[in-house]
Amino acid sequence: MLDQNTDRSWWMIGAVIVGAVLIGLAKVAFPEVFEMVMTFFKNMIPSQLG
Image 1 (tube, helix red, strand yellow):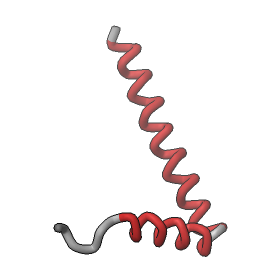
Image 2 (image 1 turned 90 degrees about the vertical axis):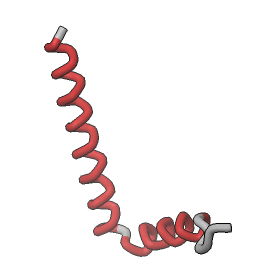
Image 3 (image 1 turned 180 degrees about the vertical axis):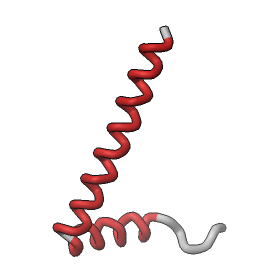
Image 4 (image 1 turned 30 degrees about the vertical axis):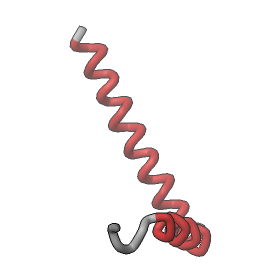
């Protein structure tokens, strides 16, 4: 039983690392697109609460 949980943990850690590498490569390869997406999401968040 512990083997399955350990396997799941390693798959999760691997998926997080692969996702971070993909985001990092996208930021290096396409900085203007990455900045445009970040600006879009920042504009969705209100600057002041209330």
